[in-house]
Amino acid sequence: MTRSFYRTFKSLLLLVPLWLLALLFLSLLGFVGLAEDVYEREGFFFDGPVLAFLHAQQSNVWNTLALAFTQSASAPVVGGLALGVLAWAYFRRLGWPIFALSLGGAAVLNQASKLFFARARPHLFPQLTPEHDYSFPSGHTMASLALVLALYTLLAPRFPRAARWVLALGLPWALLVGLSRLYLQVHYPSDVLAGWALSVLWVIGVGLWYCWAASERG
Image 1 (cartoon, rainbow, N blue to C red):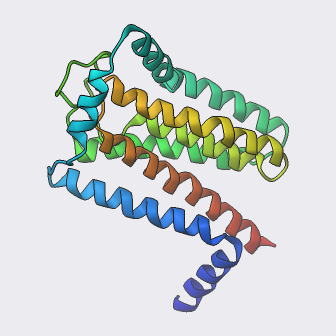
Image 2: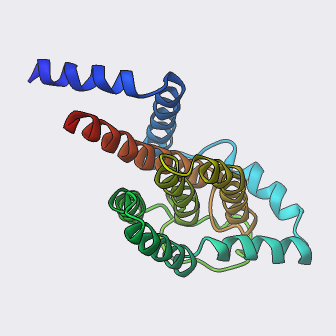
């Protein structure tokens, strides 16, 4: 068993760039650190000041933009996009199972985490779009980043240029989705950070597992 684990670990090191391993490690540290404090019902020094700052910036224009970005990462929109990509990938014989596992797994992981940590929504300021389920980690944040990373993973082997465009346009979108959740006062900053970290861990982890499994099959 020890030798098998060593061979697996060695093959992963050969396949994966060091910067990607570092990103995974930092994401793991970040999520575990946030999750531990949430589980122990401890607060974060930055949550309140960030929400207070964004509350002070509220205006009709910003309200409209924040709602638009939030809606762009809603379950119907992300689900519809995912189904469309899945259908296209299936007929083009791309890696549609890994795309489905990345997005579906992220959704299940998010809901399981919400139920496990059972963190209440912030009520420091009035919510601009009322939410009544649990808060940690942010579902919109996870869904948007998971979609971007899963789509990049799907396209990169055969359409590298398109994959780079997905990152160039998708990462700023995912960032703005996360900020919109804070602006609307429906999430703490720690919820959003945890959502980003968990998406990176899951989607990239699934992608690396798939690459390793493919290399083992030869």
